[in-house]
Length: 478
Image 1: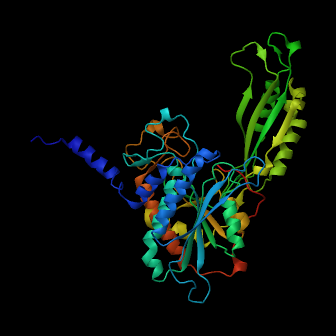
Image 2 (image 1 turned 60 degrees about the horizontal axis):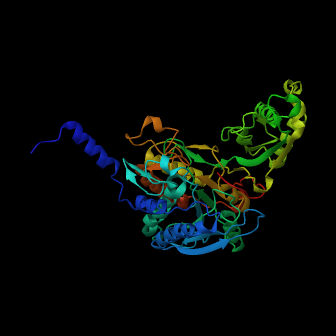
Image 3 (image 1 turned 90 degrees about the vertical axis):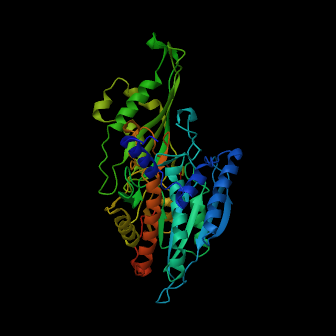
């Protein structure tokens, strides 16, 4: 019988090594969750998948002794009033009080099971909701953001059952919503309000969002910038492109406005937060099938990511002032008179406010856990998109908050990773979203160590607990 050459044997060994975690409990639960096409249910026909994702999570958590309280909220917004499925899970695995007779510290995980649409499924290597395991990765929409993290936390608690029952000094709970990727009106914020009305006050929150870029555990978030979205509606006069006296081009006003706003250099960042930035997100104007017609209007959607130094009201005023009183270089621009044709709308009712949680026991516990599991030092920062962590900061301002999850770029732990995929596919919200199996398993271990470390910390008097900066009302995430 012919023997395989060394190259073939090496490849077979590598393939086995890459997929060695395929039967791991965390990977299997993540795979089950990914196979549910739980795109944020803005329409009634998408709601069954949202419910099914909650069903799976509840079933898995109940095996480890969790009690589930399911709740559906709707309304409270003139446009985004669709019903949202949520659940609160609670594990009471150890004593209710510590050695001093004080209630044990309460740590709550916040997660979401809704996902963004996959886009053009034909561009994916496999079906976006197949949950395929290949070359050391679990593939599928939402595995990184953030079904893999949810699976890791549920299975971490399951592994901790015996240890916590034998004398663990921490209470564990979990909030899961199916609307984080869109308006977030009837999701996590409503559950937190319900929890507060019950008289519960978690001491700490772990938000399971992707928290590092390339490698698991390189970063732990202790805050996030806010997000303000708005539009420019530009009035013009339609006409023939060859006859300037017959048109007033709205695109020229729009182009100048973008240049003015992008010319402002923000310097409000710090060691944890990037600077505020303004970006044009979407443009709508004219007709590609009518090359000689100047359009009569133009529209643009914009987005500002802002630090705790800014507010939605202040940013709206900045935009309007910048267009009404442009910088010197723009005042003499031939299109400056057209700026008056721009109507500015800032969607402040759905603005996501920034938050900052002074690092304390939880952040220290997580850093220690990363060091134990991965042997690396995790950096604390506040970069990235908005998350439901802002709601925890608003409802429970005395609680400490961290964000800890999978690498946002899909993980590069596998030698099969294709260099040409880097930053173009494989990451959160990208085509071929994926997570390394090693990362899923290691994240579970980090969660376990974090919970144990936190339970061993001495409870501080309420007056000495750090208070995250509060902020105004809810808004969409991402």
